[in-house]
Image 1 (cartoon, helix red, strand yellow):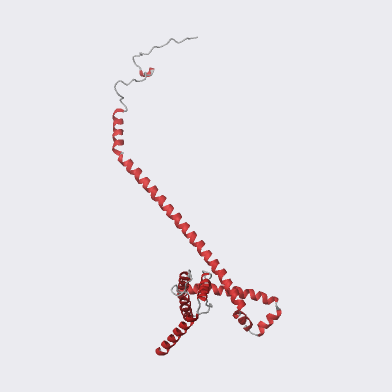
Image 2 (tube, rainbow, N blue to C red):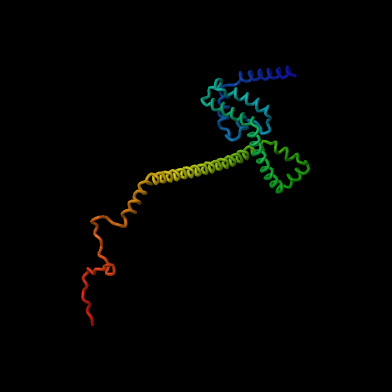
Length: 250
């Protein structure tokens, strides 16, 4: 079994070498241009694979295309970018979670197109009868058609774009919320810093305040020497030293 697999791999390598020996520089340049024009959110497009491709199909296709646009083999000025794009696409599709995400959007696109076609069939009686007679084969054949595959490709682009926009909006909201929380935290820290500085200043002047209060308690009621005081009221002057003016009667 192992020898058979090794023989198959060797045969594939031989075919690849033969293939690349016949590939012209123009074909390499065209492939670089194709890769760089792909829709960035769909890794299947970069590898030029159908959505139903298996992981084994993916690895074989990556090997073929990466050798085709390898910077050491291809003279195109953007060959390095195309090579990196292929590597990224393969990495995404070999990641089970990422692959499942893309395929989930593909299934959503298919459902939308099927619903759209169902509405169209209701208007077209002949197509509706043919669909019922063929027991689903008519619809299946349509989904294998070039027309449906092109519609599916465009619908997948639309859905992936919408999902990416939602993701970025959510990321923006998260970033804004994180920024707000960070600002609140900094303001809180600044408030506590000012409060602590005020308390330290207040504590630093404690002795001075206590001393001032003691001085006030000692001298505040007696007054200082040489201080001019206001005249006493009549009721407070037992010697009647004030001048009493005559009162007019009458």
